[in-house]
Picture 1 (cartoon, rainbow, N blue to C red):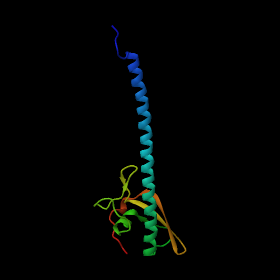
Picture 2 (picture 1 turned 180 degrees about the horizontal axis):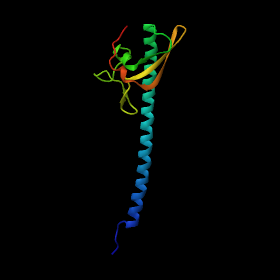
Picture 3 (picture 1 turned 180 degrees about the vertical axis):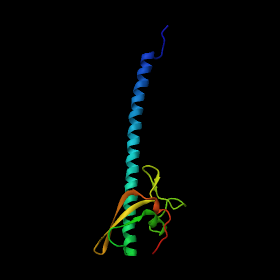
Picture 4 (picture 1 turned 90 degrees about the horizontal axis):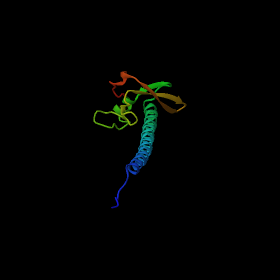
Length: 129
């Protein structure tokens, strides 16, 4: 009588091969996910910088000023992500409201640079425009 089936060695080999394929797939998917989150964060920061320059132009800020992202939210320049007026960081699930934006004036134009400096004094802001 002939036994039809797989040996233990064949089953182990199949399990090992499947494990390697799954490991490669999971690592590549997590790499793509991180790249997407980094791209989302960069887009949010670029938007913050553009809106900060627009705000600086509208209120005629002096050269080398710093403003908080929270000002841009409270004054309506940036749409918040939730009802608590928060802007979320997709990379680390943090909140970007208390970060600073450095403003520079070049003639009649303003440029803005996101600084990655979190400052808790940014929390209670009143819009002044």
